[in-house]
Amino acid sequence: MLKEKIQELARQVHPEVVGYRRHLHANPELSFEEYNTSAFVKATLDKLGVPWSPMANTGVVGLIKGEKPSDAVIALRADMDALPIKEANEVPYRSKQVGVMHACGHDAHTSSLLGVAAILQQLRSEFGGTVKLIFQPAEEKIPGGAAQMIKEGVLGSPKPMAVLGQHVMPSLPAGKVGVRPGKFMASSDELYITITGKGGHGAQPQQNIDPIVIASQIILSLQQIVSRAANPKTPTVLSFGKVIANGATNIIPDEVYIEGTFRTMDESWRREAHGRMKKMAEGIAESMGATCDFKILHGYPFLINEEKTTARFRECAAQYLGQEHVEDIDIWMAAEDFAYYSHQADACFYMLGVGNDVKGITSSLHTPTFDLDEDALEIGVGLMAFVALCFLDE
Ligand code: NI
Image (cartoon, rainbow, N blue to C red; front, side):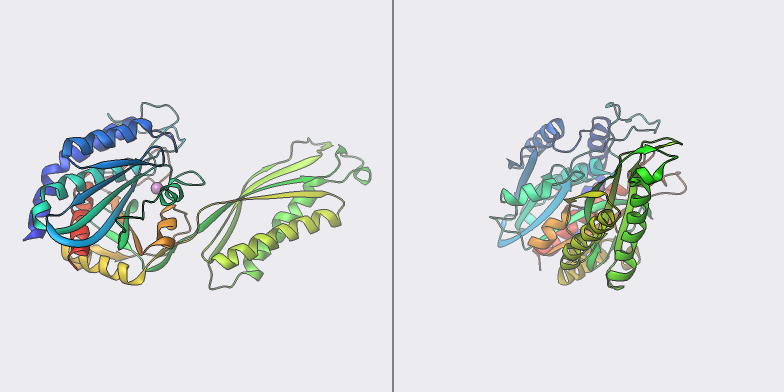
């Protein structure tokens, strides 16, 4: 049975996968700067005898061809970059780069895909078709490595029938996998707003144009785009995380600077909301004698899990893990550049449980104490290898 074979191989490669993961965790690199990570991936693929080609500067695409006749192609994607976070974990594999940390588990994604490569390379005589291994740079930073990989032809020949991506999720216990068909993650845009008035003495407001009062009005009014203009069926979030008004108790400043994020799950509403927000902010500023510079940095689109591909993933995952370990999960307003693949090809992005209350592994993604239960990587690696062959076998 293929399943038992893959389980056994996943057990065998597990120590190596953990070794890869710890090496990458200790040596994290920021988005678009994954030079050593890329070299490590290439060297490991060389060792495994898997042919690869470079793409998008630090990206790598490997190909494993089964020996049975078939034109089917499935793509598996891992991201490689780390975050500008100072690690707070006291572990032997703690980050050696101060202020840089694999706090989103991309070390696990890259090492897991290498583990999958090791398994599938050994099973070549047992399957037909091609597995495309996508190691992409810069998931964490706009414009995102996925867009660049697509531009350079990663979804071209051989053209995959589907792209699958696995992401670690600490809120899901190790041993489980979570998936959701349809719209799953949000589009994300960055907002940069500068309101310019006229500063002066706090005792003489009549001589000034107070940008703080105007900014307050703008922040509150913009929430009505979410509560009044958005269709209640379309998830929409607007949050501001930075407001700088550098006056004093008795000084009204000249300007206020604001940064925020806008997230939703509908491209036409996204465009409409951009226009409405800008118009509202500029209109309020103007009506009060100030000016408003409203910049929008377009991030990733929403992520959609194609229905049939996701149903197929569920079937294959249930065969490997048992139905009771495959969970339905809710939409998630975080953003992922895997979304770009999901708009260009049939795709499924699923979550691998890596949390473990007993071991005290509970920290969220993007925190200085994020870690994962490495035992879950054996499950994740075996699952991904099995699902890939399950798709090729269809
Ligand atoms: Ni991530």
